[in-house]
Image (cartoon, rainbow, N blue to C red):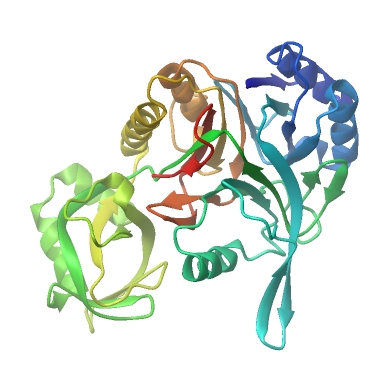
Length: 393
């Protein structure tokens, strides 16, 4: 098993793709790439075909997936607001299957076509935000096949309207649907999501709710619970609450002690002082457990460090061979005062493995045994030799 990754900031699309591919191929030695994952900045959207062709000519990968994105990531580097191509190459014995999935409305509701029928150990998925409701796909899969293999990836950020997205699959460039990679075989894939926030206040039970509206928490109006929490917090946390309060709901209710990775975090999107209800960005059922959260650069840094420690523990005495990073386009220089934050931290904490990725308009990754669409997160997949299955948080 070998991995290689490289970035090029050459301002000519084809040259950038060739440079990055040849440098990434050095990491494979004499081995042939089973998979290429390629991300090009939006500057090269009109030359997407040239980028894909150049990667094939330079390395002849068996399979290829990727997209055009707002910004791209390489080993220890995040390139924002500049032309760049990031190429990640992998050579392993695992079976690699690329696929193109599409969505269509039907008389019965909705249908997804193109998803692989044969089971896989893990999936990589990159989606067009304008034609593919990935949250609906994940909800269907979570309901129909709980405990199914994890899905990690992101929503392409390179287009501003329908038809502008550029997705890569093998030698094709597409402007709709989703492209994916199904991985099967003797490959350990650790998938983790750093949600970039920290809990505040006590754990609370939802005692009255309807859809995404929570009327009562622990028998009291939700707004009252927030007011009580606000009074108990230090000034810094009060300020963070006013900037954007979050709700984390527990995914595995069978656990007795909850940590950061146990919560699916969603925004509080509204409040009604008269009824005492709050609205959140997801449906919440009576009996579920929640905890309020806040987010800032410091908590995002701390949470990513904690998540990377989990990755090291899961890999154990094996080295992380390579990884893919799907980070929110609201992170990077928009969140952190230092450049390259997420990519540099992965490099320093995990021994500088070959990394590629992009800035997403939504990130895909597991919490507990289910897959979700996230925001403001860093979703990651790390690869090492192992027993041939995927492992999430």
